[in-house]
Length: 343
Image (cartoon, rainbow, N blue to C red; front, side, top):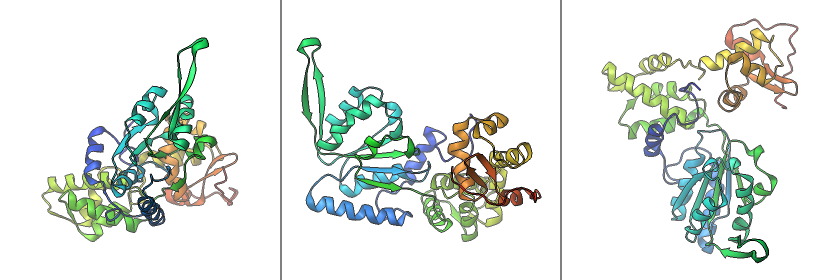
């Protein structure tokens, strides 16, 4: 699969290390998601006053929006250690048992991509989340018996981009649910300004907005674009980056003023030119583009839906009138003009 500069997922471990250096560590540094932050502050203060572990928390939303960052902020605000893992990394119950038995009172267990936990591991978690104990079966055959192993009170923080894939039983065991949505450009500008200061890169206000409006409302993408602008300015010998220079750098990366790249445009062009505007199934689009369906669903569609360029109808994907305008294609008069995102 090709790497896209606009993908909200990390491109490499090296990029993740850079993101770690830019990550806020407390609510005082965290930018955006005001409603979620306000609720978390109250829950954390109440838990600390009662000297109890924080309730289990589920964060859900598109990748790159700060679910992992919020888990680290929660750990800092609770004064607790965070132990991180991911659903695909946990293959057996013994893997998660080893982690949980080493957790101390009040510590945070962060599970990224929690929807990808194996079913047997998920069921093993139920008593751990509810009663802070796990059921172990020792011996075999007629000598088999079940014993309960107590655990220290901990907080499970789960993150998922596919909340619909979580079983109802697992969802019900989380006490708090928070949707992490795309950021408005004003918040992205503040994030870019903070990151630029940490990276010792100076951008004027207009240049900050050039980066922000191309960032698709996603902090991870904003920081990635900022680094490309920094590199470009350094090579050009500019200490203060003006808007025209930032625009040149981002256009060189193939990112237009709407925050779209070649794959986004080809996605819309395929629907309009090959399938007469839709509706068309995502599998057919993937086959036409020679792209994996998961790539299109996770990395392309969320932004197009957010911008009103795409509609997911009961019969498939459909390009909206706004998509025709964006591509400079005349909207067909006989094309239905009522578009909904009901599928």
